[in-house]
Structure formats: structure tokens, C-alpha cells
Image (cartoon, rainbow, N blue to C red; front, side, top):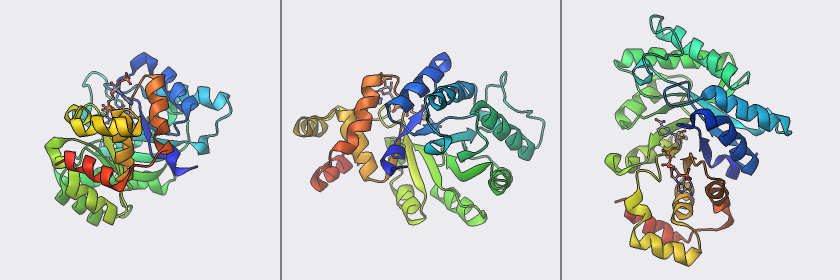
Length: 272
Ligand SMILES: NC(=O)c1ccc[n+]([C@@H]2O[C@H](COP(=O)([O-])OP(=O)(O)OC[C@H]3O[C@@H](n4cnc5c(N)ncnc54)[C@H](OP(=O)(O)O)[C@@H]3O)[C@@H](O)[C@H]2O)c1
């Protein structure tokens, strides 16, 4: 699969009953990476599976896709709709959640399985991660990841204490965390791919800034296209959750142009 096809991930949160349609649309437009979670509060994971099934009917093969989902710890679940028995051990919760994800997504394996947020105390987090390693050993999941992990000391501790190292970190890309500058540099050194979400929602001050407007004119692209292209140049995989066919088409077209090195630096300075 060309890397440009998984350099962008289609995000499926908050789409409720339109999820299947959105996933089918994103795939038919060209997306091959799909991100979801077994967290009914924000994601309709079964709807994602229905969208995938429609794509398979049109001839797409499972191996052409990168499917990523998450184990969401109890704190992130709606207490009235938890997709596992919270009285069970964390190991059992993860096994149940992963099996449900496979059923929802109509697949025998997941390309990436992500711990949706750190768990405290650390001993509990390690137990959870080791349960995810067991899924990896069984071939249920090919790669592991962690999300909402902004503490580099914690991330490096997880890295040190685990056998199957995380392949992905998925974090909100925003000013409050200094855009994870140090953490991202560490990820590059440790061959961990950084996935950025909230990239448009959290950054209107960048998208609407004068330098971005000038660059949009120079390249005849939208500010969103420029920002996504910039992110990919920095090795960041943006999560794209648009429901607009026009936006999805524009986003997939960002590989049709190159950003000049000076312009990458210009956008980089807007993050400071
Ligand atoms: N790990 C986590 O805890 C976590 C947290 C948040 C999100 N996520 C993931 O990230 C995904 C993306 O969500 P997000 O909040 O990060 O989205 P986002 O990219 O920050 O914002 C998407 C919004 O921007 C608008 N938009 C305008 N121009 C666009 C363009 N050219 N391309 C794309 N969108 C454009 C979209 O509206 P239109 O629909 O009109 O295009 C949509 O309202 C989610 O679906 C989820 O999978 C994960």
C-alpha cells in the first residue's frame, strides 16, 4: 500500500448513525487508514464495520486497509454503556473489548490496537499493556499504541518496561502541550509514529493567521490543506474526521504539491 494512503487516517468519532456512510465515502474517495474505538459514548464501531463491509462489496480487500481501534479504560466510558464487564480484571476487560472490536469491524485482526488513555496507578497500566501484548502474540493485533499520553517520562517508562514497543502515539495536537515538541522528537528517535488529532479544531489561531493566509494564496491551497501537508512533512499522521466529500477530496490532494523548506519553517514558527 503506498504510504501516502496511510499518511492520513480517517477518524470516525461523533458520527453516530452516519458512521457507515462516512466510512464508505472516505474509503471510496481514497482513504485507506481508519481510526475508531470501542467506546460507544463517542464512536459507533459497528457502524465503521458496516462501512467497511460496503467497501468490500465494491471489491476492496481487507489487506488494503489499516484498521486501528482502541481499548477505552473505564474512566472514558459512559457508565450506562460499557462494552465489557467493569467487575472483571483489566486483562479480561481488554480481551472482551478486543473481541468485540473484531466483531464490530468484521475482521480477524486489527492493524493497530491503542490504549485510549494512560491508567493509574502505573502497575495497572502495565497490566493493561501486557494484556495487549498477549493479543499481539495471538495475532489478534499487529501493532500496539497509546493515546492521550503527554508525559514523556511516562511514555519512556512504558517503552522501557514492555516487550512489544508501542508503534503509535495518538495525541491532541495543540498549544496546551507545546505541540508535544519534545515527545515527538523522542518518538522519532524510537521509531514511534505520532498521530495528531484535533489538528484543525484546536488551531484556528494558526489556520486564520496572516502567514497562513499568504501561504494559501502562494500555493493556491486552503489553509487546512497547507496545515495537513505541513504536518505530514513533520512526520505527523493527521486524523481527519470530516464529513464533507469536498474536504476529504482536498485533504487527499495534499500530496500533489511540495512545501518549500522555508515555508515549513514559517509554519513551524506559528507553533511557538
Ligand atoms: N484519541 C483521542 O482521544 C481522540 C480525541 C479526539 C479525536 N480523535 C480522533 O480524531 C478524529 C478527528 O477529530 P478531530 O476533532 O481531531 O477533527 P479536526 O480535524 O480537528 O476537525 C475536524 C473539523 O474540521 C472541519 N474541517 C474544515 N475543513 C476541513 C478539511 N479540509 N478537512 C477536514 N476537516 C475540515 C470539519 O468539518 P466538515 O465535516 O464540515 O469537513 C470538522 O468539523 C476523530 O474522528 C477521532 O477518530 C481521537
